[in-house]
Image 1 (cartoon, rainbow over the protein chains, first blue to last red):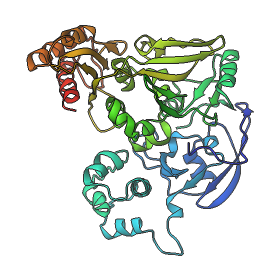
Image 2 (cartoon, each protein chain N blue to C red):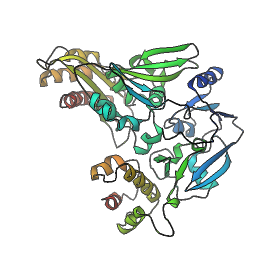
Image 3 (cartoon, rainbow over the protein chains, first blue to last red):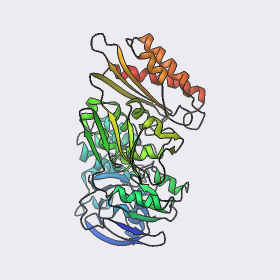
Length: 167
Length: 290
């Protein structure tokens, strides 16, 4: 399981509802150590504690995918994961994609094909695309629509242009 | 939305989880958390502690043996079932169920088969398929282990036979020899939604004439309080060649055995009953076409 091998993290732990937990998380290549309440969601940890505001809160119920990040190599909805679950994990957000001032090819493609209208859902779509292409480098349109991107919603309904960059 | 305050326990074994659960009836297991998080945010539950079992070793195996498949531990994610090539060959209904649950993000790290069973949403997908395949749930508790058929495991909406201090340790699916076909067909309002009606079918055919030697039919979202096994529909198939008339008869009986309720997940009871017939017919035909 990809969850293991997270060396150094406490295998057992018990903290009360009023206590905080010290967690260590590698985000976009940098290790951060912070104290969090057990109930803190990963999305709030990334936005509020680390200032990574590309991770959007959309529906907050696990439907829309605006909060999608890569955790230990797989895409997750960070509003459905506790920060304490990410203790020892490696996380990639949109902020970690561009290198040396150069956009990631997926970002380039989204730009090129105008795959956004208001842009709110875009970070989530890009991170889900990143995961989809890591699993399946040449997805068919059916695989993109039915499988890959079915967990991300665009309320501007610009899906045609969001599928385009992947083709 | 923020979850209410709770404590957090990270355990290194399922036995330790049992001890915490036994000592504190308000503690809850955190496996994938994909049903738990929404319940917490909506304040439908207020657990004292969450028991995180995600770092317990050996809880995410799929062991394919001669006479059974053991889906092991509480942490087998839907995605693992979805991508297992052996399962596509043996019981395609299993990965076919997995790919129809939620969306990729939910299946990846989140949702687990055991968690879905323990949560017992009356419109969940797994119960239909596991009932059709005559699977059982192995339960670890303070006084050891016991095994309960999936059919009896879920007793009502969000209610199971799990007692205080008990956790699911494994799901066991018997393997029938010979020519076995299976399928899960789901009607949903939109991609990734809960089932309006879901029907799983398992058929064992006898080689000389292709007649049905054994059949299993599990139906979700249409049994009133819980998923059910459509026994009368199974009987209509067993011993017969699955012609269109025989399939129609089985689908009709499944409809008569169902007792859906009207709700916001797919409309009126009358509509759902009609859909039980349609989905049963499709599931049987889909299984036979494999």
